[in-house]
Amino acid sequence: MRPWVLLLAALPALAQSGEELLARVDRLRHPWSAFTVELELKDAKTAQRWRVSARENGDARLDGLSEKELGRAVLMLGDQMWLLLPGSKRPLKVTPQQRLMGPAAGGDVARTRFRKDYTVQEVAEETLGDRPCWRLDLSARSPALSARTVRLWVAKEPVAPLKAEFYLASGKLARSAAFGPLTAALGQPVLSGLELTEPSGVKVALVFSAWSKGGVNAELFREP
Image 1 (cartoon, rainbow, N blue to C red):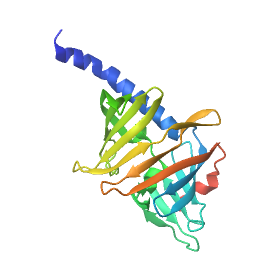
Image 2: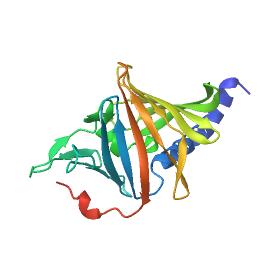
Image 3: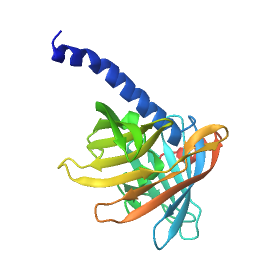
Image 4: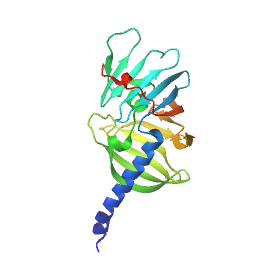
């Protein structure tokens, strides 16, 4: 049998394993269909704290907890996002690329689901540092996503994301992410955090804590 025939025969299995890997990675950030988690954004000078509430349909809301952010909220319904400010009757419509701190955008913080947003183009075996892993090359499903392609490294054992690089349509690196070690919440493995870095070197760390299953108030998700 010719080599290209063997390659074509392997493509469905690779795509399936890639989709399965993305699903497992996503469950570490979205361990239940509906949940809340507290998030701390930290750079070299300051920190912010937010509560993230996520619903079954993928909608998400951030509510500020730290002094400066108290009363602020970010609401993400589908591909639409609004900034709600204290004392303002009219919410401000923004894009998911609107930044909260450094390279951390509202879409990154509120909702990042690789399997929903990207398709697997290639799966390869690589070593990152000293860890055997899968390298997944991903392509954006929607033109609304600023990162058109993503390169994601996933450790084989235990299965966990190690690093991601996000690229613009021009091929320019937009930012990279280094994922923290796994921890446990209510008996479920979850991400402890990650660090986002711009090509300029600007960094911001995201630290997750106080995970809670369910209990999301539907009233918080009314369209403004």
